[in-house]
Image (cartoon, rainbow, N blue to C red; front, side, top):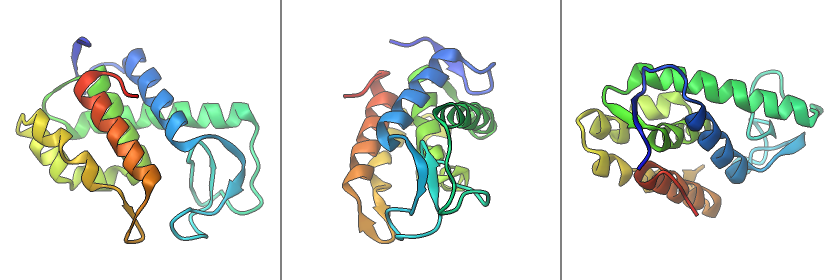
Length: 161
């Protein structure tokens, strides 16, 4: 069982590694911008799922830019999640929440039943919420089903298949 830590603790290297690995597997890496799979357009995406005002159809990155961007995003999300979560988390739980927030945004996490249950100490209840977040533009996406299952497994066991 992974060591327990609080979300407010110093950024834990195992959580960064777990989150980056899961995001890499879930997103893949593309060095030329591509349209959002749900909308066929905006937001344009690059690297390991990066979006933003500075990314458009003409954006290209190097592998180093993609890797550095992911590392910065994960570290920022860990700090932000520390301000949202009121219960102790192990590295797998923290990494699962980072992957979730990286994909859906901190706003979705902060207003979710998942977070509410977690902050009430219901780790199992929180884990059961991951599979509710498999829709994009009103459609179930198989890639989101796979990602949410991996996040749930990581949250519960510290690993995924």
